[in-house]
Image (cartoon, rainbow, N blue to C red; front, side, top):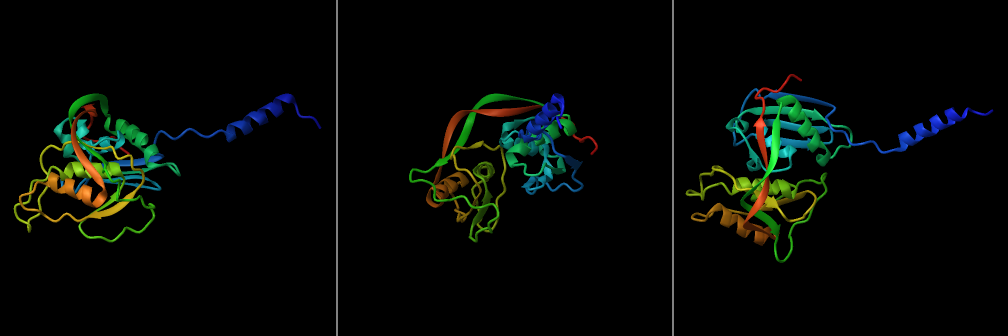
Length: 255
């Protein structure tokens, strides 16, 4: 029995189409975006997590979401002051197997859709700190994501180097402690900390950094980075990408 040539050709083209790799998804499969019922303030907000199922944010500000979506730090996002105060809860389901890098453009599309976000990027010359490898090499190694967090004393961290750079930017805004029994809080504008280490993967470590009266936080961290982690921090002037928010809605559109 002979099949018509057109039928054979159609079957061949269908097989080829199925064999071709599918382009990565550009949006979440489903997403809930709502103003947080209870605002917790700058000392406790901006809780973000990537999971095998997607992206979740709890009491997260729009400035923080924009920084996450455009892969920069919060102080590289320029816009109205309310971007730092209004808090939102987000739960977004991503296609199976989506990575963090693949979810970031999905988050961009979500913010544009739900917040009517309008923005543009520009380069700005500004003072930055650059996190680099120390002269004798790093003293830390990446771990498996599913591994149990290591035990340790002092300041605990688990994440990638970009997240560590983000954390350092906040840490450097803290004033020198005046009383060892009274914790200090971050305050003032943060200077961007750029990850220049080239280190990939997830890291899990602790830094023993007891309060040092009369020593500013930057000096204390600089010494701890070199002695305990094999990293260094340098102050430089550099051109930094800045996301300028032209307009955005305070109330996201309905889910």
